[in-house]
Length: 65
Image (tube, rainbow, N blue to C red; front, side, top):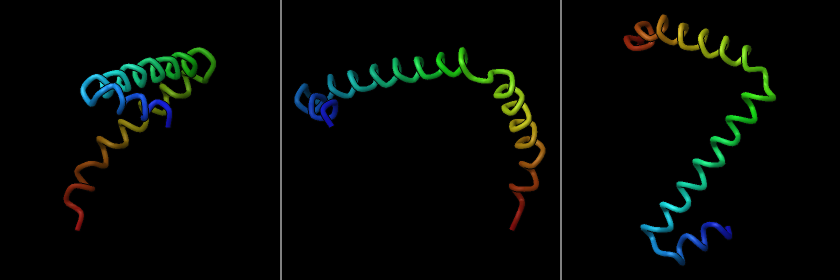
């Protein structure tokens, strides 16, 4: 709530840019935390399987009634 209030008070253009930059820094920090302390290989394996399954099932899902 404090960040939103400061964003509004600083003006719409500058405030949105400020919130966007903070969001990017926090997202990168969270990504690095999970890459270092999480199960990176399991996540990569599941990502690969998910993309493969999506590509295989996409034609059937596209023409489904």
